[in-house]
Length: 444
Image 1 (cartoon, rainbow, N blue to C red):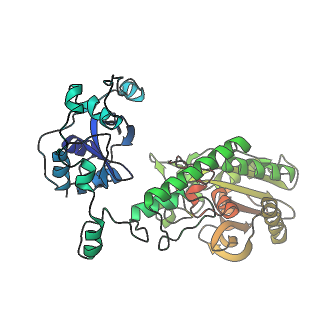
Image 2: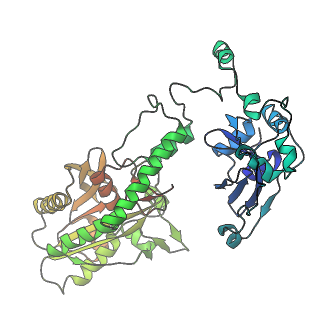
């Protein structure tokens, strides 16, 4: 079945199925670039995204609903046609495209209309839509057709007998909720740090579960606003900056756009696999995939200026084409610190690493490893996730940067530090994002 956008389905059917399964008649529909404002005959006004795969679009395509809205007073013939999946070629509702300024205003809401005095409350909605004479409403014959509710509420006894053979489950409530993969992904994105869910044991429906989690996330965001108002990534950067300044390190800031020649000096030539991860600009520039080139340049220039040992650090963004998995990002934040000159031993390097991570309150372990760029390295691990790779120099590439003294250094990914510190299941919750704030979903 072709997945038509929501506005096309509304134009065809002239009906709407709410989250609770009520079938509404649509009075008017206005469309902006991506959203729809829908006004029901009963007076309810909603705003939704014009999606092909939303819950509402699926309900309209499959002609499934729980029961009609009593206040909308939908004609029974129209309900029968919708229930029988009868295709209607003519448009029943015209979806009007309006400007963004008009769409974002509320001038197109349902206008005020007077209802004749003396009409029962249940019939007032019908009187608004079909302004018949008062007498014709009051003196309706007693032998009228069954009401909409009576005509379409199924006999529960019959359904209990034929439940195994029935293929329409829209009226049934399963003991355990069933979730599609897209619904599972939505629920997982709404879970807070440390929260878990078992879909196999969950009895709430997707709508109920989503509504509960959205309310909790709104509460979390309001509490963050009332308490600290600090972004965790920015706060961590400030904490680390204060730590290294107090330890006697000089903070530096190097360019983000660098010559590709720097990467060749780092042993990442055009024929190397790592070069495929670099964002290139023109023939000879790239976005830095690491902070090391900038620190090399500063060490060389500060060598004869600052007292021994020279100690510097930098925190800033880096870019690599590696976004697979829950621990990698294409845009991430690095901390690199290094010391050149005297006292550049492995013991001192491990001391600095331990002091930093204990200051941040993060558990870790140190293991030996090796890499293509530096050779032998010291890896800092949190469970199965690498937090840092540290090196005791000198290394062969030093001569290409004009460095001829011993040095020690380490690089940390700040998003991984946040992931370890706060128990985020996915590193995207710790990154620069338009979907999460401090690990909490803001797509509410």
